[in-house]
Length: 167
Image 1 (cartoon, rainbow, N blue to C red):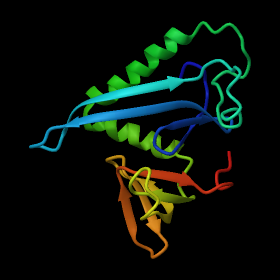
Image 2: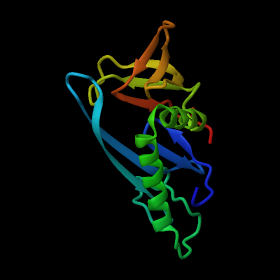
Image 3: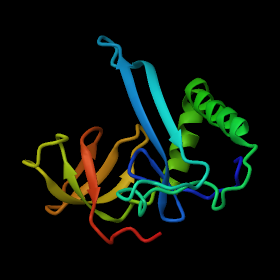
């Protein structure tokens, strides 16, 4: 909204612009044991606004919202917009969540691509190849395994096969 950027989503927590990651999102939720509903969520959002010198290991994948290092006077507006949108989803009920999930699907860069699924982060046993089908209304990644079965992922790690993503 603030910069007029048409970004995409790579995975569940990376925002991509011009082929490079410009934003990362980490979310932790606390679930009520009896109801199974989320009681609260902790969301961390990091946005690279200005281009700069990234470490060599990140230079090919990390980018910035702005292409040039101009004087940026919109950072406060960006922070306010992020808070407004996140709180709007959180407080807006089912309609707001539905709208957010619709936009998420529209911006997803993984749909139709082949990935490797690691069900338990940090452990390679049990990994399998799948093709991303969709994102469900409750934010699970729907993937089709090579045997044709559909699996809904709500945790774990996915890796995009090299060269699959065309930006």
